[in-house]
Length: 187
Image (cartoon, rainbow, N blue to C red):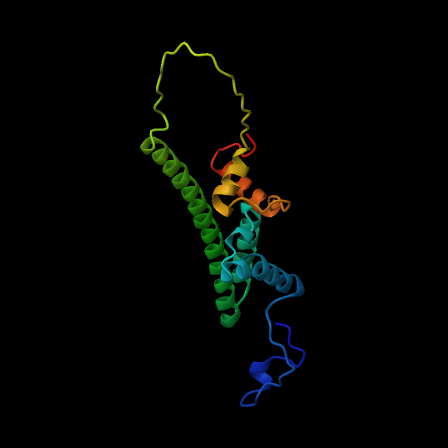
């Protein structure tokens, strides 16, 4: 306990604890850690910015284990409840990130399937062959294929405005999702 006035259970019986007295069970490292968890996981979760939740699972496990360690060390039931809320926040944030990632992949798959269905329904794969003895001209076209991550970006976020380019944070986020799905994002 960090209480500059002393133990409140013995000194302040029946009295109001002064407003400037702090009764905490956290040291500066623990407070900084809780602040970092809130900023990295809580704020994006609350604001529905799921792609801003860190995707590095090892950092999540590190934070989770530290919170569990703090829970074991505390006897203060109020602090224990706060630590459990933070633990639930971490679990909820990582679950929301996973569901959001899966949703993006399903949206991409749905658009690809819809494109294939439209191609089939529009008879795009039907070729008419005519034999003629006419002379004519030859036209040539060049086509190129974007990397998978850029195709996914266009499917999910739309084509960027001319001159603006692709958002590198969103590209990195989609690349991590594709890697997790076993797809080479730059192929």
